[in-house]
Image (cartoon, rainbow, N blue to C red; front, side, top):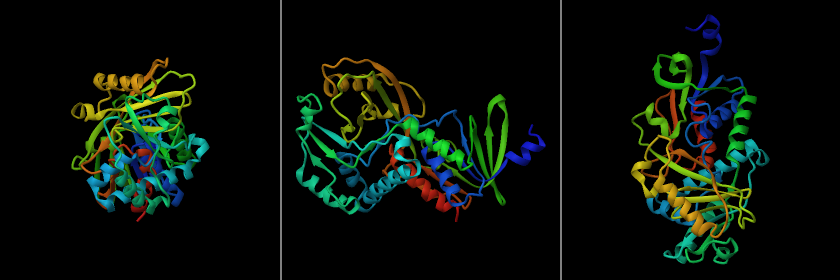
Length: 376
């Protein structure tokens, strides 16, 4: 039972954000930047952000050539270009808000491995560069076959490499810690271990019921609420078209004289890896077992992990000594197309979710759009 003081001080806010990941915290910060006197509460069911914000591989990217080619065919030119522009703007907003040094942002480029069984369509590569020049004012994709040997990849498996010099990488932990610290400086109230069970729109307000420790339940009220829980949003808003996608990730021990830096992908982006200092972080492989990986449960998938280990040993760093020191999963959200959901459910309830594995790039742009709608 709440005391008089708790009712008076802790239960009502101007805005409540559900989810303390990249999108949720960025939305809270955007509101406070534009309206400093507003009271903003962020509710997070985990002690850390639950889905993928602290579990991703740290790709600050707009995507590989084959991924973009697939997106273009799926979405059409207008939607495709908007998504790319939103990712590019989102990365700019993230870096501007937090500062490159604070998130260990490195501009080492992106590299797509083209397998021996595949070919590079030069005409489509040219057309894609012409299309993307509208956003980047420069050529984006370059074929660089000489990089296969320079980076030490298995030449019997990798035919050539497509370079994207606009890609970057960052430290996921530093990013989220810096974002959380910045939100606190702006006097955003963050409550972790607070699982939202029910949201109800009442005359003149929104009621948010939360389960916390000791089997206690609390009810907060606010003027407006935003759902920023990505793959977990359907628990609270079941009518949305969102499919969860679990991502398996492994991380090696330090590898002596690691010959490459940057973010790498292959198989239309379903596999991705990067260096972190002299380690390799490798993830992906959902396409091996889509049905099993359409889940919000955190668990290892041995079939996928074995394939990750195979690519690591046979293709990425053949004849190198290392061990697998870390293994984990992140939960992403996907839809029939690649566009995120950013919309009003009512005048008082909004949602920003379904980031399709592009949370680092899109989170800050979605937050700006949500902020604008919430302050209307």
